[in-house]
Image (cartoon, rainbow, N blue to C red):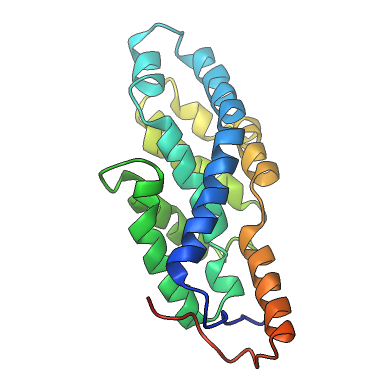
Length: 202
């Protein structure tokens, strides 16, 4: 697919702010279902109220891990749809904004976002992988710590469990960058731009 360049009046900070607003809404809408599925599986191997259950349910920023997964799942498509220079600017802005969007003062979310994106890209990209959401789920479960305990490690290899956890990602996250690239193309035609233009500097 040809990569597009952004209109010169569009600033990367504004684009990423809009993207993160959409991802925040998507995460808030889908996290309750995802968390219920996660806990339903966890309680089968770590009874509710047990120290292990508390460690893997109550004492982890699971909502932040999930948010990072949502952002990474869609942001992994930036390089596919946008010109490399524009994509680089947008990814830099994503790194600058995503922790604030997650209401965190550290880099927990941004570090995880780019780790997940890197893993997706290593395995041929979000558009070409058969199930990129499964890779996102796998990394979230690793970050929570399921593979560190004998009783919860089988969940890491439970395809049905991981597939269920992937459903909110596969079905509930909007195709933001695909739609954005299409909007750029329409705007370029309407404005009689050649398309050989970039994002304006801040």
